[in-house]
Length: 449
Image (cartoon, rainbow, N blue to C red; front, side):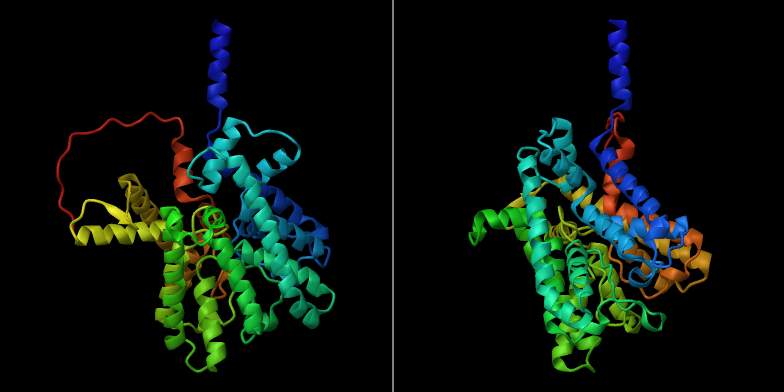
């Protein structure tokens, strides 16, 4: 009996929660990726890359961010680029999803613990059907990425020859996973991204579609695939995601059209406005030089980067549903209503509390990180805040300060990228797993506002 008791106690002691498994899985993938990128075979000059640069690149790829300290096209060899692409794919799908998929491909059934971890990883509403949903996620991902590569191939091959095939697959996966890594080099020392395609409506459209499809989320696409055009049957979350995503694309695009690119021809102006509106919410590509953005344009970019994509997607950020819940809660307060609701359905108050907590966490990380980098490296705080919003939102766009950051600032950016990908609440729940529930204190009113 005693031995059995001790054994059970040991099992409980070393049992990891779903949230802890998610965090450790991402950390392990990043570390392995960094070690591979350090190898001489990973760089074009066949010299070992310093661990700091390799770790930063692996973190950025694994967290599908896109911030880099070594240009992807000119520094990394084909092997190094392949390692980066695998990290992007793992980061976009999620470590747990990849592990579960491999397990199922080997003919093994997912245990209840594995299904629970999968549920948390992909933000599934319930544990039932998680294994089937995992298969849907993987199939959909590969099909869309292949179609995206096929659509990009004519343009890439005509411009780059045979290497255009690799570039097509690389940018299709990078776009769908909302990573923002590119293979177009750094002319004049500036990161080019997709600026050479600013007037190419075809490439802009393909990349934008890949970004939007990846950022909307698999839960939404599963619902749409199931009910087709019977919109009334969509889940409340699906409707919220679609409407909020449309608003966050159209309104910023209108702003950019009239305030940022008024000197460009109408066609390029429209394409650039739409592209910057889409990419700002976690994609990381850009077709225009972002350093030329006005102060107002940078603020709009920062807000979009912090909001990010949708739950269960390849994107990061606070999520579109969080922004929608907070706005609906504001409307409810103004109208003196007790509940937050959408499309004739009421949202639980715990969702509102979680949304408020997520907002505070992201704002704290964004502001504290930006101020710290500004103080450490002496860079204007506005540029630093743009960088930290890009990191914590796992976006990847930059004003060009990333390579010039010192060691301490790079560590801050890496931490922000990691927290932005796994989610601030995931980290909190992982730290508090196994803790005792707090008792309720006596109630007393407090005035706010």
